[in-house]
Amino acid sequence: MVHFADSLTFSGRKVVAARAALPFPALAGSSLPDTLSAQQQDLPWKLLSSWREQKGSCCFAQSVVLRGICQEKPSSCLGQPQSPLHSCESSEQVLQHFLHTQFPGAFSTCHVLQQPCDTRPPFPQFFSPLLSRRGFLQDKAQAFSSAGVESIPVLAALQSCPGLHSLLSGLCQQLQAPPARRCSSSCMAGLEQDDFQEALEELRTLAQCYQTDFGADGSEDEADSD
Image (cartoon, rainbow, N blue to C red):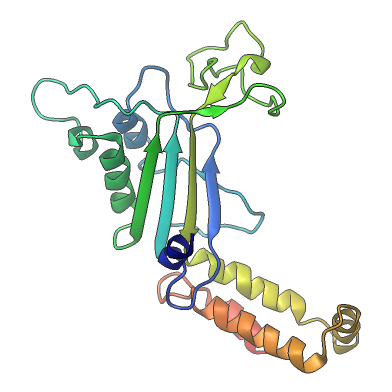
């Protein structure tokens, strides 16, 4: 775990964003290259935290796990492959190629596991009727209820990305409350004023570790310096 954390939190970065596709939007009978090729303009995962996500796909490092998709080699058509993804030899290579295409220059690791996520009770039954029992998308709703979904394919990712600059900068702004209120809150937490200021400065420095020339919002930096 130490080596895993170090691979995502280098250059002074200590925070990562969690994303997931639950379920992974795969059509029944389609291959992984087919599914990812359809996601070129819209990444298949969603951010799990509540902060506003920046547009654009960029990250410094990421670790991605896909489970519930068969690891068999995709069947090839006669002639040239439909796309570079279809020419890959394994599901891991397909996912790795997709990540390098979407996030050029980022350090990316990926793993593909065949076992899907078990969604039988007591797992919350909130699935669309368009899902099959194995969690794949169907053309029309099934006769059984959503509670009949027994497993789903899932994609999860941890990303060190420039969007965390906005999150950490916003947290700094919220902590910069009026002096009386800020002092009261810090005293209640047993934190001295000098220690509070030091922690705030460390948080501001951490936010700057995620700033990029092409992805940062200068207005937030100005607000931090006020």
